[in-house]
Length: 448
Image (cartoon, rainbow, N blue to C red; front, side, top):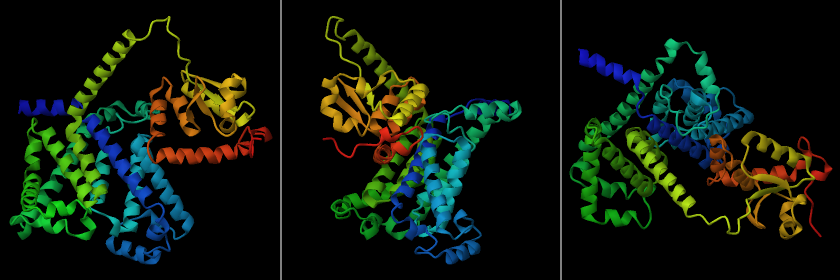
């Protein structure tokens, strides 16, 4: 009895798997964001009030099933657009770690509502996502891989100490709930396969990969036309699914079981095209890899610090020709540009200087006047390192504050990079209409 009480005391005093569960939150947010983004062009047809599933029919089905959806509250196009875009922004906020548990709850409610609006698009991973996200609300999934704003810390200080003391036990219980749910998915799936005749005789993979929706042209045929691969793949899948929970129970086997599971689901994503389902399962597998990931980060940090010290020792002597630091060149005649750069400089405190291009030597600015009239440029020795949104991102990326560096890195990601570029162009073309803008801010039509 004393050993059991000691075990409970340890379980309630030290949070486990914080990095892993933070990775789960990040990846689930990314999967939700990509679901919104992938359907964005067809959103009105798929989810709109006058889409493929009429609003009245949708409300009737919702009433029969007893479920709820925020899309059922109003049949107007404006309400639909507000909800859809709010859900997209909430998913992005969860991905980058903004908003805390309140933001995660909002993301869950909006994602659930969208899933109920068009259930025929679900692929199984969606079911797991809206089961796991409420469990994450009990965990400390924003402790890592997030942008700290300080708001959560200030709110936590106002919570009574007795309630704050429950944070660690609730985190560990939430983590245990996610693990149990994942094991349940594996066991049920494995037992269903054990009872199937085609899984018993080792031919199931042959039929699965021949279904048109799950076929990767030029690759699937290489698998289902090989008898050995079909039999080995069929039996290996069944054995893995049934015995996965046993591997999780053994601490030394736990990370290996998670790695095998990740490889298994990545192969599903490639061969069968079930990307959302595969990434959702991978996200949940990360909770079993928290300790190895922590060790890998520590080793990587040690290597980076050692390389940095080595490069400093091997750096050129002071007599060598120094390299000029980068400089952000902006239009000094534009009041809006000046105010924007001043705001970034005051908030992020970057280590590089921002200078109106009119104050720079003519031999540096002359080759780039056409672009300097339209966008900010990050220059170094007369060379353009970046322009527009990416120049501002690089400028903020030189900040000593971590959250500004993370935002700068996020602006360089595929998809976000293109959106940032488009948003910058729209603002630049209309900067004379922005607060602080004047007629001098207008972008010239052309340069003679």
